[in-house]
Length: 330
Image (cartoon, rainbow, N blue to C red; front, side):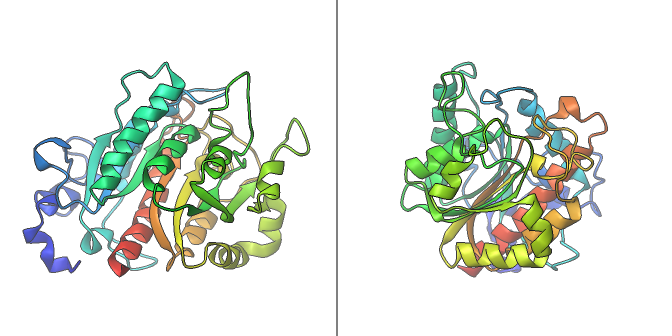
């Protein structure tokens, strides 16, 4: 869509609050990157091309909760995000109509399966309206219902940044938690494992074959040791090769970062990549057919300075630039 189309698009109306040169960034109610809030009722989603969505749910966490508060604090910290990506020149709001669609509301947060079904129902509405979703979690379990909504027609590829493969299995009697979303997604035919790459894997494990499912299914796993051998440029080459030309989804768990950069997360693992390395890798995904993305596991109770939420907002902006570029190229 051409930049000059904004006056005719209802989703772009009222966007001056996105411009810090017009209205200071410390004013107004917090929304993702100061985009206009659009409710589903009364045609509020009409014309929206990319929807920024909060998923305040951490019922899938196996240890330290708190990611349910992630969307609210990411919204707050995202007021620091300006309009243009200085490194790439991409101005996502000029390429696509972008709006904050609010939160995927969960009426029964204490019932895990039902809560995930509610999230899937919300994102199905988003998908049916042709909106590309970019979400802020929430724990990593929320990615599964998002994929259930947007991968209905065909399996997707996956670029997954994380310290953990999240392809485990039953834990304390539950097959649904934040350590299994990508196993379940492959089993349900939502992901093509041959077009999945997992980057930054590290940390102690309970069993040496803990991530056997990823390897057995043909997912490309880049452990942190190989990450340093390949370097950022080499990892980008691998990601582009694995994903190819088909549609793909980006999932960014902030525990993929070294906890020096993102202490506010539930399952920190030392020895991760840096924020700059993460930004460079995300920018290297340019040209891929990306159809959605998320940033998960920001846990404000463990983030006293707010820095992890700022990191989460910044990674969301990098992914937003990719999604806007991909969508405008279709």
